[in-house]
Length: 640
Ligand code: T1G
Image 1 (tube, helix red, strand yellow):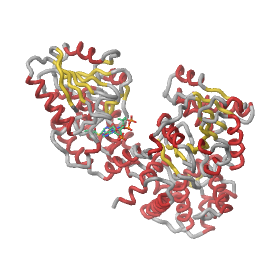
Image 2 (cartoon, rainbow, N blue to C red):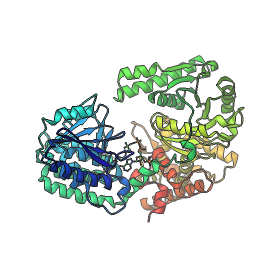
Image 3 (tube, protein in one colour):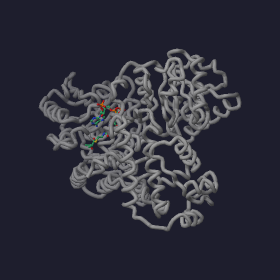
Image 4 (cartoon, protein in one colour):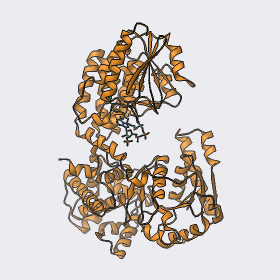
């Protein structure tokens, strides 16, 4: 039964049970409409408690219904029926109360949440705005600036912040239903819409906050629409604001950006649908990381943040100490940024150790090597791991391009070897490529998939090749960018076109950030290995030969005299010496860049390196900031 009603004395209890997240499907909406009528008709009922079975209160409208014609009863009508009831409805909240779920709760006359509950209106992340009264009711419960941030920012808030702002009436430990029952006697069925909006104290500051949110959206239209909806709630009567919100919501639902965001939402949840990801796993609580450089320390920190016990191993004591320092700095940064308390940080530190003693690897359930990107160096590490680790310990390599199957074959039991390719900084970047070598055991794949979820990563499975998925696509569009400037375009117009498309930065800015010498070394390696598809980049090579490696040398494609990036006249002169300037417009630039991504993606699919086109899109969004509201390069190639 999706919605059931029981009564204990004068209190009716309406229970929604629609796994996995109690999405407000047509069945839920219909069941709620009937529950309102039943409770209104039952004279013995003096108050109603609304709650959900399972792990969360309603986590939103059912996104899977969005591409079908909307079916009555519509959620706004259900919420209006509850809000207009003659008896008070108390919403009992737990888990992630999101979107239509929070709108439903705001239509109730009071709200009680369990500790740890998170509440939000994330519709902008789906290219939408709240479409069931959220933009009109929220500013009547919380201050306008809080409402604006929640609606246009799309991020949930914890229960204590919701209580402080007025969104909920109580946070109750113990039996939530008892707490709600105790509260029921004091709740009157006053509609939320009858409350006055909590207008901003300083409208100019509010307007500045709104402008900042829109600017950060980088072209995602739903954010600007969300701002307009909150402004209407402040400036118009509730009924008018509601009607305008619904019209804007329905208009956005069919917008290409909303379709793309729905696509990537489900694509991210489909990357580990390979049966091998769902099987039995090996327990992982003790993780060892070999190599305490930038990658190793980031991986160690990511594992600590996930509650794992971590041992960092380096070649000698000074290196182990330096690696420990890097990990400690990352933990300190989490405290500085308010991500965790000092106490929480210190308890993580207690789960961390470091040494240069291979014998300390004996307890590890999983070892991740993150040493220098060199075949011989990694082979040497694997030989040591083969000797020093338990036979059932999983051995993972963080290599970004080496042949993981070949590496696996250097140990006695190749079935325990897998690739875990993190992206720098490993404790921040969401993408994790699980590189699946020939002969790996199924439970090793399943364990890697489970680990990726525990680390909060967006994981894709990749086959073994040079660059796997994300870096292969990156190399392809970097080469296309090199071809564009060799053809006469300026690096600055290429970067501007990519930023205008919604990329976080242009490909030349990105090279300056990571270091031109990295690409230079990769080109030399690919040239020497005769990697198919390799194309020389004489202009990029010329900058490297001049020692212009980017930010770290104060100049690369850009100059960094005062820290800020500025076009470099010497680069313009160097370009002029190589070829005549031939400006090209942004649309043409992006057509060539996207075309390169899509051709490489098609090759990756043909070779079976990626299981599905959407995995390539997920990798580009999570790995290189491809704008989510465009879906991904492969999505765009299928979209007219
Ligand atoms: N509709 C349908 N299915 C959903 C869903 C939803 N809203 N949310 C999650 N699922 C599925 C998901 O596809 C997966 O399915 C399973 O649930 C577990 O999800 C009118 C219009 C709730 C924080 O944006 O943020 O309300 O793969 O793997 O990591 O104004 O899911 O198992 O088959 O993500 O624990 C607003 C979106 C909708 C919330 C749980 N709500 N969901 O995270 O599990 S628009 C959202 C999430 C709206 C109103 C508007 C997360 C989660 P499967 P999961 P999780």
